[in-house]
Length: 161
Image (cartoon, rainbow, N blue to C red):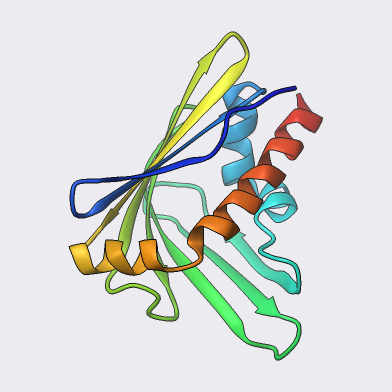
């Protein structure tokens, strides 16, 4: 089935809005963002990486932790945060902070899912602490990794639909 392209749009000096359409009900997309057994199937990183840690305590105040390892040299890239709002299958809000300082401070990630005729539009708003943090993200290779992950997510939710 045809799905929409990934769109990444800066908004103001501290926000990034990511949108993508999926040919699947929003409950499946929400589950893919919140259930470790599904997260492990799409958030695997780029080729040459393993996804070694995927922990989710899905409750307000609960934490999540993800760690990837680059096979070639064992380099670890970790991140995590705290869930601030959970409204299945419509909204998920959490903090995001990487172990490495890819950007200064932490971000607030707001995931909104809208369903129409069995199709889901994902809108993810990333709010950074400063314009410098947003610039660091925009200057990074984030788009290629995000695009690959969203393509895997699309295949996963379509296989589950």
